[in-house]
Length: 253
Image 1 (spheres, rainbow, N blue to C red):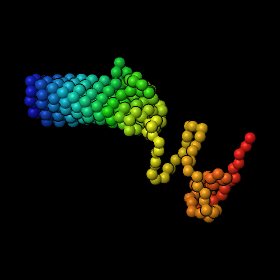
Image 2 (image 1 turned 90 degrees about the vertical axis):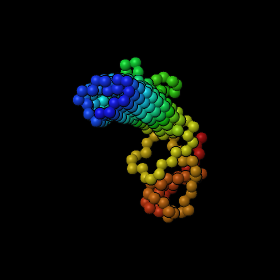
Image 3 (image 1 turned 45 degrees about the horizontal axis):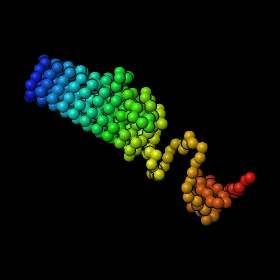
Image 4 (image 1 turned 135 degrees about the vertical axis):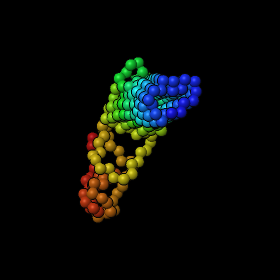
């Protein structure tokens, strides 16, 4: 073991291959192996565990038993008692208690998860400044979430205690609740997906819009089965390769 700093590694008994640097770094650590704790009080409450990397002033300060965690940033994950979390940035997962398997990157990412004694939040991926910090359209705090993804500045959940929610936006993306995916925000004007969709296209709205009109040159024009287009007089459907049919459309009173 290598210990540098006032009371760094103070309680070591059988721990091995640990590197502890900073006042109070790993000062409660007794057993475990291959931990790297750097910074004032980094991993200060950690008693046992192996293969964790904790770097930053007060980072992982409340961890008691933790293995395979990577926590980097001042006051990052300071309240957590669970393991296998990965953070990068100041105040990431600041309030988390007991959660495992979370990834948080960016200033204040997942800041409120676990606040106020909320149930443990597990297996979330949170990337971006203030991502996963709030819920809804205002600044109500997100204290519980599971198996969800929040990517983008201030991307947020629809509400607390939801699961399998995916929100991806440049900024201020707002989720739709459990088992939903939202890409973009209210300012998004165009979304393009490359490749071929392999599942059913479904919308919960009441209107499907194809912005641009198209008129196939004839019934044998190039096309793929399932292509649909329109013009002022007809709706066209490609029923087989290079085989089109059409139906007339008209006004009504």
